[in-house]
Image 1 (spheres, rainbow, N blue to C red):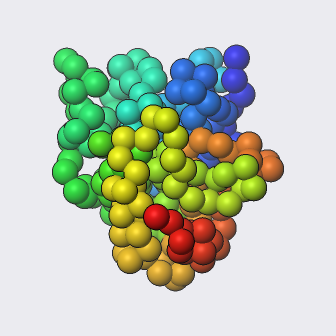
Image 2 (image 1 turned 90 degrees about the horizontal axis):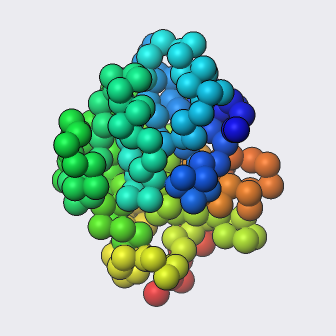
Length: 211
C-alpha cells in the first residue's frame, strides 16, 4: 500500500511511484479550487482518501501510453475529464475522453503540448504558475547523475522526433517562463527531490550536443 502524496512545490503534490505504470510518478495541481491530475497515481486507499478530502478532480491528463493505470476507476470515482493525445486514445476504448492534436488548453494556467518521440502520443503539461512548471512524463527524465535529458531506451518510438520535440520546448520557453520540471519517472535519481529547478538552463545544457 502506498502513502499519501506530498507537497513538492506550492500547490503541487507528487504521488508515490505507481507499480502499475512501471514506477511512474503522478502529480496533482491544485488550481483555483480545482484539481488536475497528471498521470495515474496508485489507486489504493491512501490516495483515494486524499483525493476524497480535496475539492474535486477536474481533469486527468495522460502524458504517454505507459502512464495509463486505473483510468476508468478514477473517472468513475471523480467524474473527471480524461485528456489524452489523439494518437494513443485508442488505448482507452469505450471511455469518454478529450483528445487533442498539437496543443490543448486544460485550464487558464495549464496547457498540453504534444512532444512525440518517446511514444507517438507523448505529451507534456505546462503550468504557468511558480515561474513555469513542465510535467514531462517520460519525455524528459533525470539520468543516473540526476541530470535532465531525453533518454533513449529499447521502447523509444522515434529518437530523432524526441530530440526535435525537446528542442521545440527550448525554443518555446525561456529561463523566465520555465523554472521547474517535474519528470514522470526516475525520480529516485533526484535524491529525494521530486522536481528539477533552474529547468531551462539545465535542459539547454544537457541537450546541446544530442544527435
